[in-house]
Image (cartoon, rainbow over all chains, first blue to last red; front, side, top):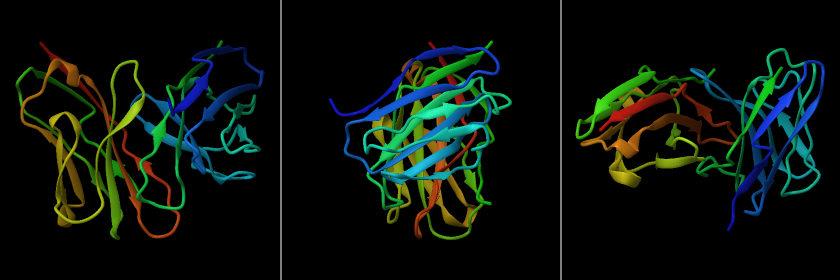
Length: 114
Length: 114
């Protein structure tokens, strides 16, 4: 089955620790995205990548970092600089190059900072 | 900056009631419009989309939406809801010139009581 996988499903972190969230897709999509979902705030874009080895900051990139070394993988690191990291994180992808594309979403990772 | 407003944050309906969820956007140019749905425990998935043509679009599971350009609106409707429609619904908008980011509304949580 084609799709997007995210791991882990639940993640607990102590304050001051960096943590990396995994996102893998086998849809052969060029574009990948990371969103943060908080109650009452919808989805906010953290980082996006239109093609391998390239990525751009979204609206709330502070305290996060990404890499895009492979087409199918777009890991997100939540650093200790992120002031309020507890949230639900969604990864998405689409074929890229068009505003007519549907984005496909992974199941999400719920991060809790203790 | 482009924004998307969903004024109904929580909606509670009985089965068979009619549904209308509001969505307004701020951008004055040509846009593409989407409604996504997140059922409990499931991936965010596309419900319907509008690019051009007939402003009344039909999606999955009996949902439809009407694009009214003069009102910058893209309201979601369903004549008769079912308990299985309980979910969170997100409106999203993207400008269709060049590379643009998909902007999501804050979401509406729908609870349908049996």
